[in-house]
Image 1 (cartoon, rainbow, N blue to C red):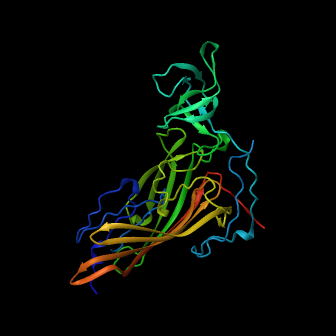
Image 2: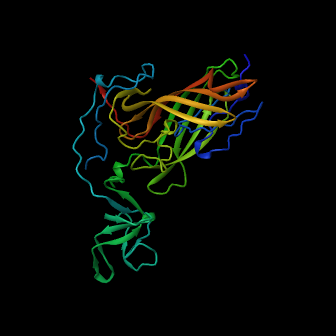
Image 3: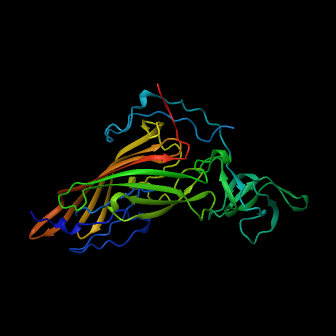
Length: 367
C-alpha cells in the first residue's frame, strides 16, 4: 500500500526546541523536525530516520501513590524502600546576597540608576527583601545604614548584582544548599528504535552529556549539552540551558507543559512514587508522572503525537527517566483518498535514563 507517509523518510533527530525552525516538508525531501531535547529538556524529540523531545533547603520527600506502569519494571515500588517523612519547614524570609566579583554594590534610595546612592554592599552581604520593582530589575531591601551615618528603613539594590534567597520564588541563600554545583555534570543513556519497515536505521543508542559552560549569570548556570550517537547513526548535536542553581528550574519555563522538555522541574517536583536504581548501585526516590501527550503540527497535513512518561529526582527535580512512543498522523487528500488523522502503523520509541551525575540526589535504602 502506498501511503503519504513515504516522504518523511530519513528525518534527522535532535533539533533543539529552542532553535525552532520553519517546518516546510516537501515531497521526496527529509522533514526537519524540532526536537525539544529532552535533552536537556534532553527531553529530546528523536525523530530519527523514521518515516513519515543549618538545615538543608531541601526537605525529605513526601511519599505519593504508585508510579505509572510504563517503564517495564525499571522503576521499583516505593513501598519497598524507607523514605524519610517530610520535616516541618520553618518560614524563611526572602533575602538577597551581594554577588559581585570583588566590587561593592550601590544601594540607592529608589529603584533606578539616577536615584541617590545611600550605601554600599560588600560581596557576600545579605539583606532582607521587602519588595520588588514592577519591572523586576530592583529589589527593595531592609534595613540599610546609609552614608554619613544616615539610617534608612528600606533602600533599593539592582537585581543584576545580587543572587536571591529565601521564600516564595527564591531559596535559601546558604551556598551549601544550592542544588546545582558550579561544576555540575550529568550523563544519560538513550535507546531509540524505529517501528517502520521503511526506516533505513532500525535502532540506535546515544549518550547525552551535560556540563556547566561559560557565560553563567548568577544565579543561573549555563548548562551545555551534547548528544553523541553510537555507530554514527545520526549526527552529533548540542544545545544550551540556563538553570537556576538554587531552585533547579530552567530559566524560561516556557516549555513547562511539554514533557519532552522536562529536564529541569525544580526541587521537590512532586511526592515520591517510585525508586530508580542507578548503574552505580544507588537508589533514587523519584516522582513519576504521565501519561503525557504532546502534538506537533509539521505541515503538509502531518501531525506527530508523542505519548510517554517521566520520572524526576524528588530532591533536585532533575530528569531521571523518560520514555515515549511517537506516531505520525495524516490529515488531507492523497491519491484520491481523504484522511483525518490517519495512522499508517509507523512509529518510533525512545527511552532516556540517567546514568551518572554529581548532583546530590534523594537516595533511599531498601527496607
